[in-house]
Image 1: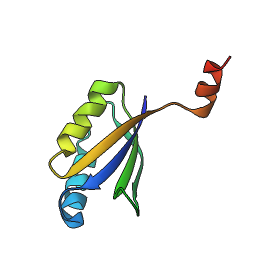
Image 2: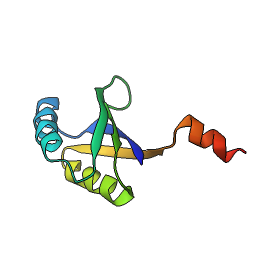
Image 3: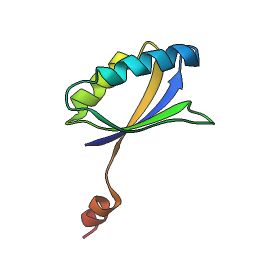
Length: 86
């Protein structure tokens, strides 16, 4: 499954960056980060990642919860979504 996490920092960016570096080295089993971006606007960063299920995705959000607030979306590829129309 693909997830998109919209992230708002709760701490200084330097603290978040240090935490993120450690987290990337110890991801929950089955999680693969496909993209990590810092952004301008309402959210400070976006993670695009693959996880085997919602529970594992939730675990990642819980681990990051002290330093950042996340809003996580489940993503379906355009091709898969179009198949639902047929």
